[in-house]
Length: 203
Length: 290
Image (cartoon, rainbow over all chains, first blue to last red; front, side):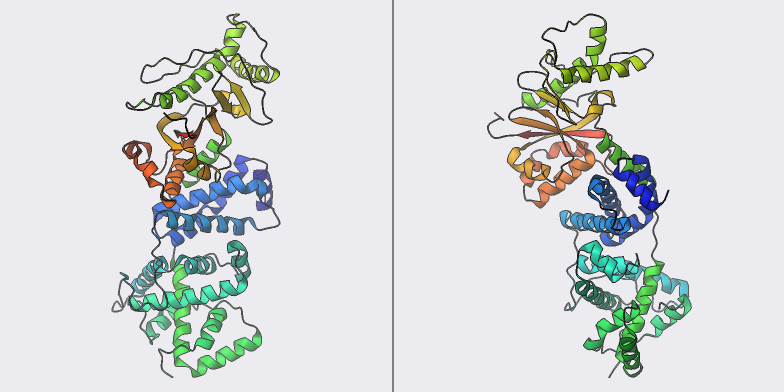
């Protein structure tokens, strides 16, 4: 069955088809939740809640919209709700902050590329957790889920200008966090260039 | 122009360059600027590195994740029936114990009805209404489909007697919801499948004033009353729902209502929530709790 057919059947109450959709999307949804929530426990909770919300909302879901986009929105909402509920929102950083209390590993002196990659990965993970949720949402949907500006706009019910602006500001802030955490040399892209070159050009 | 300076006019364009969102003219202008601005070039390289960093992120979905989701879905789909009541705690108002027990009693009688009727133990005095008959027939059909139909045994901790009332006064059924008045004051509401499902095990019961509970209940349209009286309505919550309720209470600054039950939460909540277990939420309207 195609995804469209699975969604149509699930709308009629077919739990087996919905289960297929869960299996189809569980990794993407859990990964999205993990990056938005910042820890596996909350991610599991939010991702599960997103699927349950999808099941409850399916009868009202209009299939002219992308099921995936809708699911991303539910996940995003579930994560934001959870962060608010549990007061784990650490998104107090702003572009004007002088200090960011991060514990980002500083492995600048490690020559091995794999370690540099690991440092970058950890830096991104921790930097994401430090971003305000509004920025984190758009950045994760763009970078992780590869959604277009328009798709993010639909998923989060934001206008395109806001999406572009948040992505831009989110990137600037994430870079600031990485620089202050020691993962990037401020004003020197030697390490960045090396990683980008060895890892393949980003764009 | 040094390598730490980022031109404000170009920062947003560099972000869009990364996302390939620029038209040809804009792209050319930005690339020319990058040739002449070490700060923006450094910034763009950082954007590229971060983009690369995102591709390094990965995760493993926890074992049993999909199964956990589907267990919750099925719990939503088919609310289970009552087989056992929770251990009765001391120092609790009688009605908080009596309500679930009354529900037990109703189900015992509902389950026993076809068997008793078949054996001629009960007579149809005061002819049950059509809807009630339909429900009983449905239960009887299930019983007859089993090789050895047996009356399920119900156990209630605490030893207090269950109300001994027959479901003689059946209320008319709603379209998709079966509702049976089992006494003058208690109405048992159940989804059509309720009579044939496995029973929940109450892990906890929590009581809230209607003024506190109803705003949350409005956010949970799928949650249907379990039992209903004039001033007291009960709901069966999964532990996941219960966790949501607690979060909502905390967020809405009504934690004091939770605090009173805090001693019970340790046993009521576990992580991840066990969706096969149920929490009885009792909503009391003003003046009912005395």
